[in-house]
Image (cartoon, rainbow, N blue to C red; front, side, top):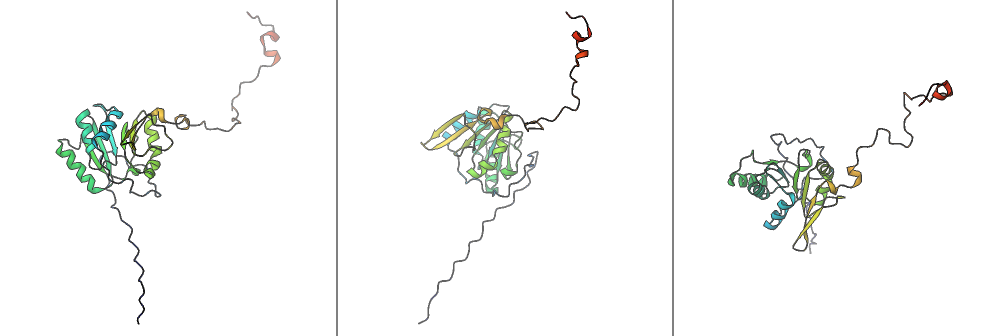
Length: 233
């Protein structure tokens, strides 16, 4: 009888991701990409009405604000924010399919790209220096990779609301719970630990300070008023 042998299963091909298009406008993609963090930073997880209500309430948006939604998905949060609070919006989304969905939702709501802009970009490449209000939903690896960028936003007086996952080593100023499990966190400048709020160290942080190149000479006995016989009051 002929012996049967099981053939080895072929190795699955790695999933490829489309290269993000260069965003138009001044999105300032000047952050240094992190090769250790892949582009897949979060699954599509649409925010429910209760989450949107709490997130917008915690951010305290006004007409002069621009809300940045990191991982904006289909753009529902941006549209709600603009509708309720009259603010502008910037959406960052890596998946091109959801970029198109978000742009369609924005257009269907009557907003143009000047009011709500949805960019096809990797969040790891975006410079958030100008951001003052951020909503973010990313997996922990994305939160870790962007932590330093978030710290700079908070230092500048910005505020950040994160959904489900917290920002490492930062203390939320408010936490709201949905369904007994899912959390929404608010971060402000008060969330920063002391090491992130202190100014940059002096040029010579060692315990022995560098000598003054032009020291003030100590007075000699003959140069003091008492020694020279000068009158003193």
